[in-house]
Image (cartoon, rainbow, N blue to C red; front, top):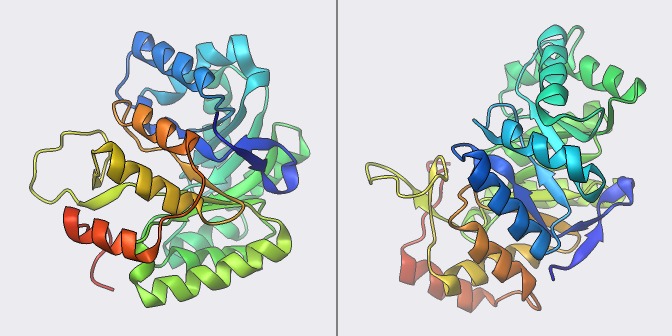
Length: 288
């Protein structure tokens, strides 16, 4: 089984690999139900989804009718204004067939202008706060992609006491000194405030570029071999008290689950440097 840890202030003992439901974005319900069986087999008890993830919320809805109590359920909004975010929430609740969410997150809050609009008067943050006050959501978070995310998350955390953060984290990404430094600052803040860190892109190999997209992993080409996936997932899980979001492809999910289930120790830097060389691992967000 996959190890669990306390998910910050919620006190929920979440599996350290969280199911990233982008993997269901192109799935049929039949395919999704097979994924549910796999999640239950490995004891996964935490789902992260978003309304912009294609079929994902629709596929998860029937699961929640039967097994709502088995999962900590998180979704997101990418809307920046109060009224639009509130409409997003109503749609998500209806599509997921639930009365409340465990976690509602401001998605991809990485642009300074968008952040100002979202956190300001009439912004989406007001919808999150109101939803929590009304018992429609329990906890509030913020997510992001790109090299500037740790800095942007720090700004968001200085403005409001969010309960969770989500951002890229892998060995290659952390070789970027500026990213590593700002990530460390954010990590220190989160440690003091008991804010769980959710990480993405653990098995990213490089940007897709012009290559045919053989996997449903959106903007990055993933590692494919079990050995490479295990080393990469184990390295990400080596960050204490953090949680790894599984890759966004149902065909890679079994490998990630298997990797997480046998985690014991983080690979050494020498192991990871060798992996980078062998698979030509490159930054997903270059040019910084």
